[in-house]
Image (cartoon, rainbow, N blue to C red; front, side, top):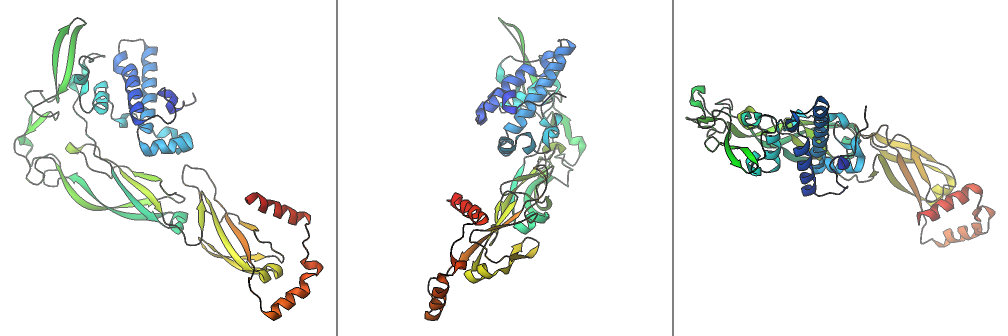
Length: 394
C-alpha cells in the first residue's frame, strides 16, 4: 500500500497556507483530475485521475476545516478524526464537477466559468442540487475528574428539524408538488453558444424553481413550505476520557436538518476544561506542589496527595530536600482515543518551609545544633545530583 502524501504536498502548498490559498489550490486540482474530464481516456488514465482527485479532495476536506487543520498541523494524520481511513469520498458532496464549482464559487456552477462544461459527456445537466444541513457549534465544560473517567453530557441546542405536519416535504399533499416546467425537474437549465473555440454548453440554476426541480403550489402553513421548523432539543454527547481543552468532538447527524430530507449537519462540541484547584495539567501528566515543615523534612513524614480517584498516601524519608519530586506512576490522565496510549503520571514537588522568626528558646536550641556535623552540608553523590537538578531549574 502506497504511503500517504502530506496534505500540503498534495495541493502544492506550504504549511501555514491561508484559507484562500487552500481553496485556490484545490480548485486547480479538482478541475484537472475530476473523473468527468477523463471519460475518454485510457483505463490507466481514468484510474490515475480518480486516485488523484480523491487524494486532493481528502486533503481539502481536512485543510479547509480550521479545527481539523489545526489537529493535522500538530499531530499529522493521527490528529485527524478517524485517522487516514476516515475520509468519505462520497460524503464530500462532490458527485460531479459541477458540484465542485458550486461549492467553491457560491452556487455559480458551470455558468460561473462561461464555458467550462460537459467534460465527460454532458451528464452534469441532469444533476439536482444536493442538500446538507448546517453544522452547529457549541461547547461543554468539564472538570479534571470528568476528563479522567470520560462522561456523558446533555447539550441543549436549537436546531432545524423536519416539519411534522408535512413530513419535511413543504406541503401536506404530494399532489401539490409539481415538476418544474422550465427545467423538467433537473434543477438546472442549459444554454448553448458558439464561439471561436467551438460549441459551448453552460449550465445554470433554474430561475423558476431555484434548483429544486419542483414547485410547491400549496405550501405547508407550519413551515411556510420550507419543510423545516425550529426546535429546542437536548442531545446526549459521549465524551471520551483524556480529552483536552480546545478539542472538538463531532457528533454526526445531530446538527441542522437539511431541506427536502437531505443529509443532516453535525454537532461540533468544543471542550472547555475547568482549572483544578490543586492539580496542574500538562498533556497527560499532572503536577502537585506540597509544602512541608523543616522538621517534617528532617524527620520524615507521611503526606496526603490529592489524586483524581481519591487521596493517596506518600511516605517521605527523613532528610527530604526542598525541590524533591516524587513520581506517582499512572496517576495522571489517560490518552484520548487516537492520540496515543497509556496513562500519564502525577508528579509531586516537595518544598520545605523555613520559619522566618524563632522564639528565644527555639533560637538557642538551633544554635546548639548549628555546629553539629549533621547540620553541615554534605554534598554526597545523591545530594550533589539533587542540587545540580535544582540549579538546572533556574
